[in-house]
Length: 187
Figure 1: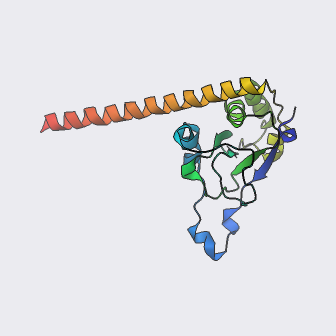
Figure 2: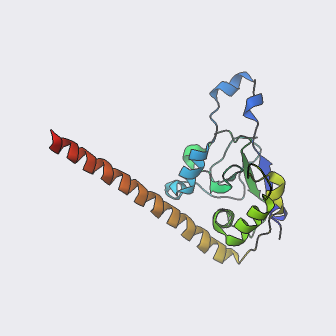
Figure 3: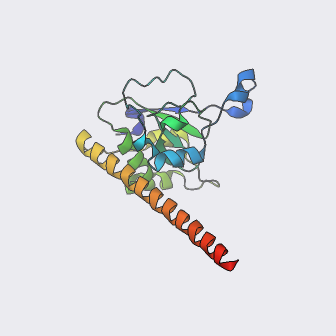
């Protein structure tokens, strides 16, 4: 089935046109926020994932929502820490309108599925700047296993992402420690 049959793609706000007075206080959701959310931060938060997410708040992110970056072709789930940030035109909210689709599985399929990557690559052929468009995203074909299997795959995917992020952080901290020890020995 096509993605547009089960997901509504709501493109973010064009921030360059914002001339309202309250725009000065708004913080934009960034690629770094997406990667932070994708690396499993939300697994530790107290976010309640519900089908009744409030999508009427315009372009503001809500914890538990799936966001997709058109620039990096990556999807993630907004964490508590990034709730309330403005989704700009480089992102879209993927509003799930299908009861048998797990948000974590949707992220896995968009980010890692060979079939999905192949479809994206074919769709972006000939582009000088390979960037997925909303219309291409909507046309992607997605296969859905049972909801139970989706949840298992989605949970395992985010667990893997979190383990990878923690291993990277550990390596960075070890490097800092060793360099500090070497600095102390040098004196």
